[in-house]
Image (tube, rainbow, N blue to C red; front, side, top):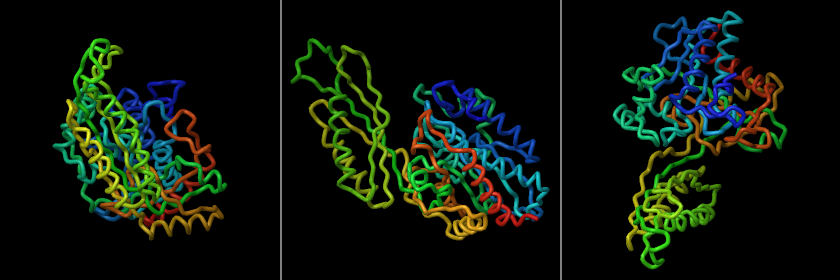
Length: 396
C-alpha cells in the first residue's frame, strides 16, 4: 500500500523525506498504528512511533520497524517492508489480545537513504545523538532548503525532542529485503544478519576555471570535470587493491555551470566506500583523499569532506539466537549472511541490542522499480519477528 505514495507513478517509488508523498505515507502509517491500538507520536526529526504500553512502569521498549523514504525511482520494498512488518507484529499483538510487560513500539524512520539531505541514516543518527540538533538544523537539500523549512511545510514540528534516552530502548528488530542474490539463489527464505559492513561517504569538490569551449586553447584550461573524471576512473583500482569485498562508488556528480559550450568550473561528487573490515574502509579513505589532493595546482583546487562514517557492526548474538530458534520451531530454513548495505540497525546498535532479518530479493535487484519480494516471505519473517517480540516484551 505504501507504494502508492510516489512522485513517479509507473516509474518506481520516489518518496523523498518531508515531501508531499512523505506526508501521505506518514498519515497512512499513523492511521494503521491507531487502528492497532497504538499511541502515536512523532519526534523533532519526523520519525514516527506507535507504542503499545507495557505493564512495567517506565520500562524500555522493544522497537520493530525500518525506514519509509526511498531513493529516486527506487523500489517499493526497501524500507517499507520492514515498516509493514512492524505494523503487522503490532496487529498480531492486538488480534491475540497480548499484554506486554515491556512496551512494544513500531518505528518508521526518515531519510535512511540520504536521497534528499545527503549522508543517510538521518532518523536513527538523530535518535542516538550521532547527529546533533545543531547539525540537523544546518542541513540543506540540493535546492538550499533547510530540514526545518521542509519539515514545517508538511506540518511537522522541528522543535520537538530528537535524541532519545538509550534507557528507553530494550531492543530493535529490523526486517529488510536482502538487496542481493544470495537467498534467492540458495532457495532460503530467511537470512540471519550477523554483521553490517562499515561505510563512509565523502563529498569531493573540484574547482577550476570556466571558459568558452571554442576559444580557450587546451593548454590554457583548468577543467574541473576532466580532473574529476580522472580521479573517479582510479577508484575501482583502489577498491580491488584493498580486497576483502571493498567497494567504492561515485553515484552522484553535479557539474557547474552545466552548459554545453562552457568549460566546467566546479564539480561536486560523492564517494561511497564500504567493507566488512574497518581497516579497509580507513585505508581506502586515505588513498582516495590523497589521490584527490594530488590534483591541486594548475588552476584546480580540491576539497574532501566526510559526510558519514559508520564502522562495521556486529548484531546482538542473544537475539540472533532467539530468531534462529523461532525459525527452527517453524521449520523455516535460514542462513547466516552479512549486509553489504548500511541500515538504521547499525546506528541503533550503538545504544541498544539489535538484530536483523533479510528476506530474498527477486533477481537480487534493489533501488530500482523491479525490486520485489514475495508476500509469503514477508509473512514468514513477520511470524518470526512476532514470536521474538513476544519473548522480548514478555507478553502474555
